[in-house]
Length: 146
Image 1 (cartoon, helix red, strand yellow):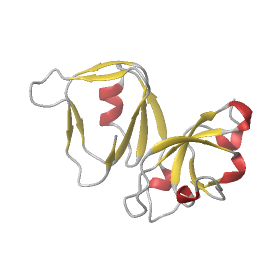
Image 2 (cartoon, one colour; image 1 turned 90 degrees about the horizontal axis):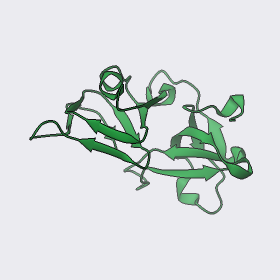
Image 3 (cartoon, helix red, strand yellow; image 1 turned 180 degrees about the vertical axis):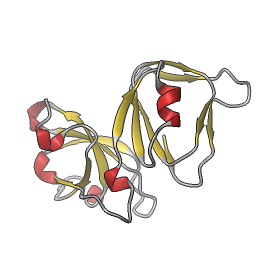
C-alpha cells in the first residue's frame, strides 16, 4: 500500500527527472504505489510547456507534495474513484479541479460538466449516450481534462 505521505489523490510536483526532463515542474495526482517502490502519477496537461496529460511511474525522490495555495484550487484538489452507478451524482458534486477516476464499466446517460474537472478512465471504460445529441456536455468556463 502507499506510504501515508503518498496516498492516492495527493497533489504533487515532479522534480529531478533525468530521463524525462520536460516533465520537471509539472503537477499531477498520485494514483497508486507500483512495483519497485515507484509511485504512479497522473500528470496534468500544460499547454504552455506542451506537456500532455499522461500516467507515469516515478521514484518518491522525484515528487514534492504541493502545499495548499490560496490562489490555486488545483493544489488542494482531491481525487475520487467512481463507478457507473455513482458517476452522474459524483460528477454533479465534483469540486473544482477534482480528479474523477472512472472504473471499468459502461457509463450510460447524458452527462453535464459544470466546473473544472479531470476525468480519467481506466481500460474498459465506455461512455454511452442515452441522448442522440451528446454523451458528455461541457458547460464550464474553466478547464475540463479528459
